[in-house]
Image (cartoon, rainbow, N blue to C red; front, side, top):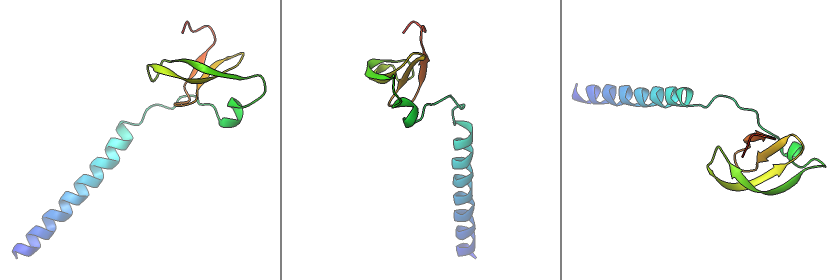
Amino acid sequence: MAEWNIALGALVLILALAAGALLSRWYFTPAAEPTATLAELMRPGTANDIGWCPAEQAERLHSYDAAGRCCWTCRTFTPKGAGL
């Protein structure tokens, strides 16, 4: 009978961990933000240079165009004239 209790306890523990993992993925998923595709970043009229990424708080490679800039690392778009 002790083996049955151990097996049941292990099953409950595994199910609780799986449920916790699923709930944490759902709860901590960031809101959808506009991102740029690679084709959009490489289109004619764009230039690449190092710039400050507000999302990562670091200097990163960005794609610049007339609308603004997009970080190559995290794909955060910063519109032109945002003061960064």
